[in-house]
Image (cartoon, rainbow over all chains, first blue to last red; front, side, top):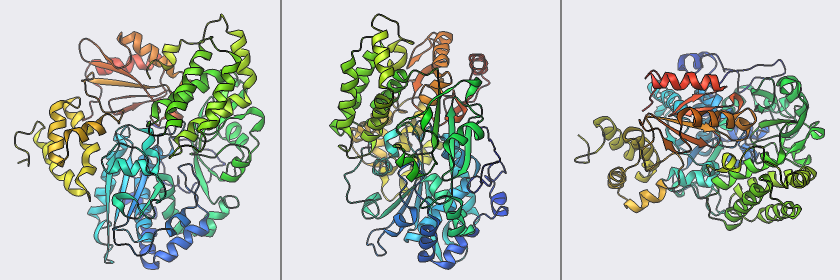
Length: 438
Length: 169
């Protein structure tokens, strides 16, 4: 079971109810629960969307798209029903924040879903959890049932004449389904293969109707934002990066855990102060700052603010907030191979650059790792990754190429030294052990 | 009484499926959950499961198989009563995920996607299970076990062997 952690630098907005028994609906109500949605019903869609825009909240799944703007793209008039779809298919390696939200504060996700529904004029929301999160699905299902029993969901919610329903859904194991159009395919009972865009989901989404798709953390922020006001939330963060977010710090740190920090918080402080520094007094080698798909930062590059824009300027991404810390003992060759082995396993195979690119990079790095590489292999890996970028229908191709490029560009010498030194050497672990399962 | 005569599922699951196909705007949306819930009860997605689910939703068996082959948690062969799924993705790897996997292999005498002769345990190396901050981690059936050490793994396996572990349906 996840252990809750705490640090004085945390600013608790979304994690305010963590550890307080808020899965119980009475406790949730006691802690200001279901107030925001009633205010939202009273104030109307325009007020909701304006408050969300003012808050500067950007999508917490990784893309960082402004939430208020996304909601405003949904056409007011639509012949087909509109839908809200909550993405709880959390699968980006290094990311476990939604896990904690579902476990500690499921009603915040439900209330946020209702608020999004009110904003766009939808009467039905879906909360989709990855199949591995069965125990969390049970928590969310119970929370939904409790909300129905109270009259907060269903017909005539809170006696206001408004109807809103929520259906919970389980996946069955697929990273790719975390991509929004693949998620809709999965929910429609198909293989999780992405759709061609445009049309975007806001226009043609689930069952052909206009659909808002948000990450679970994004959605769970909505009730807090409406209660505290958009400006107050925005002020917690940096320019164009409102509020706080959950950062999951994992790998070689003394105190791994999910911490809520203001947007723009310094990455070095997050690692050394909040997470207690590098485990066992070792030295820092590198950081993968926002889930496995984000280009690596070296130990010299971590004086950077954790928001979408500053991370972009630093040549990487804020991503899903999963900060993976690597100490001096880690072999980048091995780490790069494990990363591409994951993406090769998860590529749905529709787009050739992704299907073939991930496979050939994995094959090449497998050979390098086994001690049979040549220096030209490093060029070849870079060439393959560069030719995947921007050439696939969904971001999985980029997600595989970007970290690969980061590793071979920033640690080229390590790859070359490894190749030169391992001509007749022994790999650290065998290839079968490393990628045999896939 | 289930809408399907001679259902292969328990009365509870059959009743659940009767309802599940009606709650969505399209019946087919029930497909992925049904496959997983059927697997939880039967142990794997058998030919009979495919036939009945296709019938319940009103699609071809081919459509069911097409979806079945996409999702990594769905299997067409039985696993052990307790399926150990050890994560070796980056956060777990950094904190000893491969040592845990190797330990499980040695302890149970089986490899990836293999089942012990008594049918009690099976082992899988899996991708990220969303327990990165509590790594290394594994799931046994649907239960999470985290902050693992080889000693802890031994204890957990013994607990399941003695029938005291959970068996989530």
